[in-house]
Image 1 (cartoon, helix red, strand yellow):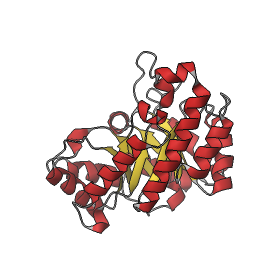
Image 2: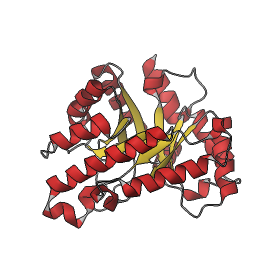
Image 3: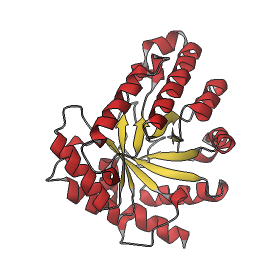
Image 4: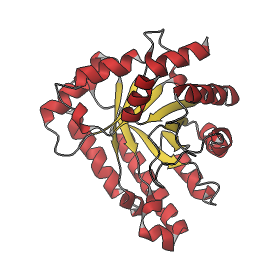
Length: 280
């Protein structure tokens, strides 16, 4: 039964009974054109019918207020939760979390545009400090500043009534940054979304993160990469683009079995998922 349900909400074969909270599926959407009155309803029709019930949405700073309001109200009408997707590598260098806190303030302003029921549920911080020049020179110090900055931002988000999700790669523990990783899990997030982009090793690559999530009562999200391989950024080793959605489904079933249902799932990203779904 679980196999059939996962197929339905990932591939989009129709409406099924709403599944338990831990099995929610989220989708990253970097597409700014969806935040318009012309596109929002179609977008949410499509994903809600596929049982995706959370969107991590990038919203450019110059987006018109009326378009944002329509998008969020359409999401609410379709019973889809929306989180503000944001982040810059340099924010990981700020021990006071200044850049992240500015975005939390922006999320607060966005939420004043709509009724409480339609507001952003939280933030998704996609901050990758390992892409900065400072990381190459002193990665341990950068990780310490990053963890401290996340703690500050998480505290601010809690004060504002926003859930705080942090994106992390699967390799912080294997590269020796276990102390900073534990700090992030303890005080830097409500949820950790692991960019677990190494096909066939998903289970072992989130073992430490799962142990910390359980220790501190946090939610763990396993992200699948679906974008087409291109250069060194996305390779065949880390994307399911050519493997198909069925391979993603089988891996998700395996992870839910191994981790007793404690893992949730996200797919990266909407455009790639849509293309793969249409090719099924």
